[in-house]
Length: 148
Image 1 (spheres, helix red, strand yellow):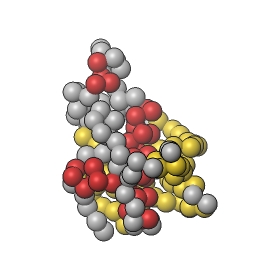
Image 2 (cartoon, rainbow, N blue to C red):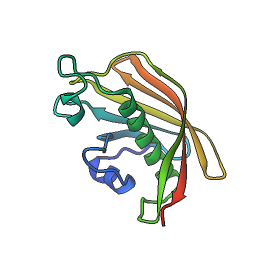
Image 3 (cartoon, one colour):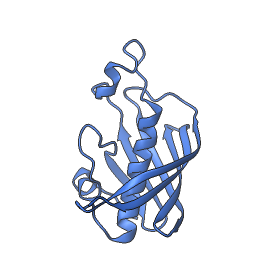
Image 4 (tube, rainbow, N blue to C red):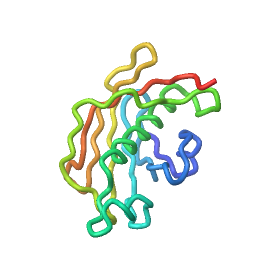
C-alpha cells in the first residue's frame, strides 16, 4: 500500500489548479485500488456560482475527482507518468448516482478499483464518500490516447 502527498500526485497527474481535484492519496495498491482525498473548501472557484445561497459541489466535479484518482491508479499500475504526447481521457460514465450533497468543509473520500483493462480501455468502479455516507458512485471508463 502506497500513500502520496501533493508533490507525488503532481508527478502522476497532468492536472493543475483549478482542475486538480485530488489532495492526498491515503492508500494505493497497483493494479487494484486507490483511496484518495479531496478537501472541499469554500474557496473553490465553482462555489461562487453553484449556488451562492447554498454552496454544493457540482456532481460533474465529483465524477472528475474520481476520474483523477483512477488516473493516478492507472499511471502507477503501468509505471508511466503523464507526458506531452498522450492523455487519459474520460470515455464513459455508467450507473452514476448522486446520493448526498457535498458541501464546503467536507472531506471527500475517493475509492476507485480497477474492474478491467482491455485494449487500452480501463473500467473502474468508483465511489465518493463523506464520512460514512456515499455521496456519489459510478462505473467509469478511461482510455489513453495520443495527442500529437
